[in-house]
View 1 (spheres, rainbow, N blue to C red):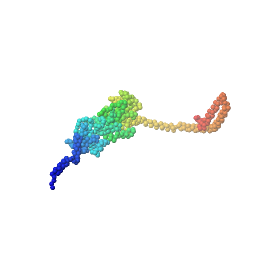
View 2: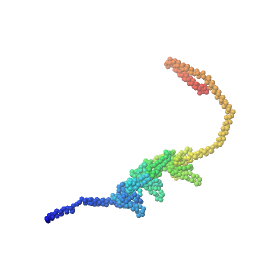
View 3: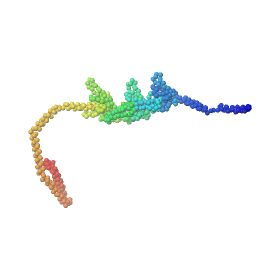
View 4: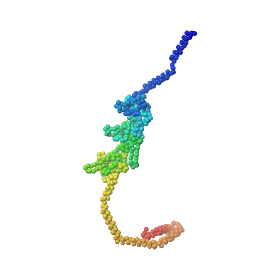
Length: 561
């Protein structure tokens, strides 16, 4: 049995299109690699487009930095990743290579600053606690706008005090000593934290005042005037005065890291000073009291010389009058006269007239005449105790009664006023004067005269004349007593009859009244009778008074009233 040739040719013709269709048909399996290639290409393109420049940051140490993990952030937004950490050729620093993102490229100028954020303890301030869980990171501050592009940076070892996005102004304080003020110390205005200390600069060669840079945030920087005064509020201020023990603490942070404060000056002239410009220079005072004293413009220099103890008197002590502060002591110096062989203490004082007089009422050029008038009325300077517990002293200006005349002298521009011993020295001098006067009294002669007087008095008392006088006086008293007894006995019948006489007189008056009532009318007889009744009433009243008085004092008939 043989096959038909035509049938075979037809089968080949039909199978040819089917084979061609199987050869060119697209399979869905190919979608997987195609999508993967597309995603890889997109990621590669995105990585190339998002890749920023590489920068190098130099730090003193690489503590907390890890390659491939540590990020660079600004306001918690990632801007790059640390790629490599190596030592510098001199082995003193570390170089950190960072791959930044493209969006951070415009911020990479010479104004940018970098520092490592890690846990820090600065006085009472603790920062960077969030890095205990997430690890350290590099913080970036782009700085002010502008600047040229840069790729190499010097990292900061501590966070900067001023950020580019924090408005405010910087100022400079001048102080002879730094005290406990450190970088990051707060700046207070009416107990509100308004800024911080940026740092300080030592003078060349260590001679001169220290310059302290501070930053004050807006809007508090607008409160600063050209006459604003700063003072130190570091630590604890302890004072002992009339009100007892006083302890003042600005804040816990100021206790550990120090701090400064400023306030609004008093408008003594009614006109406010102009605002302080940026980078103005101010003096830093030791305390609020010292800053307040510096606000008085008018000053009068006084000098006095003391020859008593000035223990506890130092520069800065108060000068008072009637307990009110007028100024401060500026100097205390021992002056020795080599030729005369004497010594005394020179005390320099500075009086602020504005403490007692308004600035408009102070007449310049008349202080010498005013001081002379006060001295003529007894004004004297003396050392007085300011606190018995601490031993501090002060200068007290007081008026002395019957003070000897004195003339106000001059030493340059200072006026010299007289003094007197005060405090314990004055008391001891007064006691010494009293003791000298007592010692000058002739006590021995006075005692001898007193003994002689007592001896003669005994002789006079024991004399016969004195004895006879005493006997005669005793006899006279006995006679007076007997006479009073006889008078009382003789007057007894009269005293008994006096009440009866008084009753008879009352009866007579009643009868007279009846008689007068029977004779009415306005006649002479009626008026005479009425006058006689009035006289009888007065006589009866006098008789009753006499009776009562003699009953109480029968001896009055002899001795009188």
